[in-house]
Length: 66
Image (cartoon, rainbow, N blue to C red; front, top):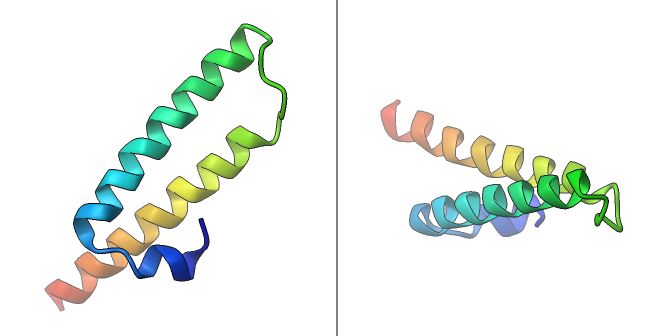
């Protein structure tokens, strides 16, 4: 998910996507532990998506406060 796509979401959708990405990362970790992971770069891209989501959430929190 790109940053411009993330910025178009409302706050509820952001938190929903964050939870979904966290679950996906957990499933990827389990797959890696059992040697079932086919794309070893996928956990890295999910972590990046989580970071993007958290960044946009934090930007909005700062904007609302100030």
